[in-house]
Amino acid sequence: MSTGTVRLSQRGVAVGMTLGVVAGAAWTVSMVCTLASWML
Image 1 (cartoon, rainbow, N blue to C red):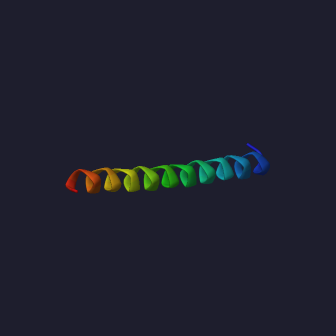
Image 2: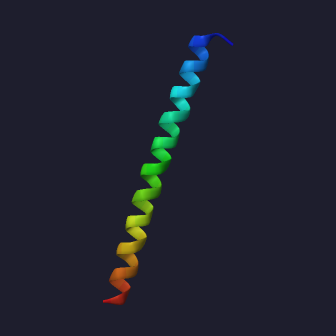
Image 3: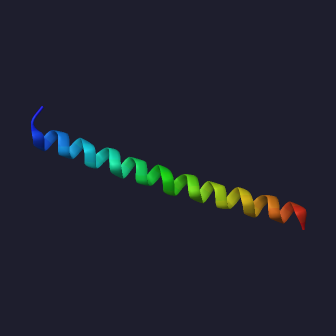
């Protein structure tokens, strides 16, 4: 593999991980809101 390909794949992994964290945070917030609405 060339260094350009390695850098590109690392960037793809970083983007994927960032999207995963954002999606997880959004899911967590939506679950908390759902549970809070059930309590009220």
